[in-house]
Image (cartoon, rainbow, N blue to C red; front, side):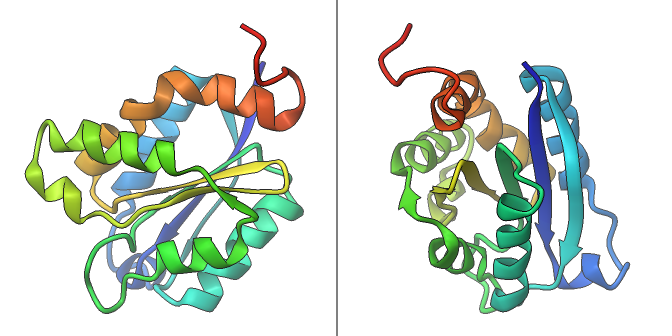
Length: 164
């Protein structure tokens, strides 16, 4: 089963071409190697809540991505708005994924407790917020990678919630 995955980077500098998007490259590698996913859309937007919301809606509704992964904008900076944008476009939260990501990352650094990333569902798309650093991306995504195929199977209707 190949999952359709969309990647969204929220970064002012990245959107202006002033910073290489190494975090998205880590996501791409993990999605392709660990999850068996195909990238159907990738974009960088500035740290603007409306632009993040618009991109998430398009990725979920138009591209019909099974999984939308964001990177950046989950910290405490005044420009970090990704969780708020995500909360405005999802239908339901999936708090266990965000909790597992923070717990997994906190085993390596206590600073992980400062990440405000959320996870939720829009239609049949699972949206996951990851931190902006390549190391944070890897730690957070690997903390939940083993559960993503099951979650996506349920969400897509390919498997019932209690099938094993």
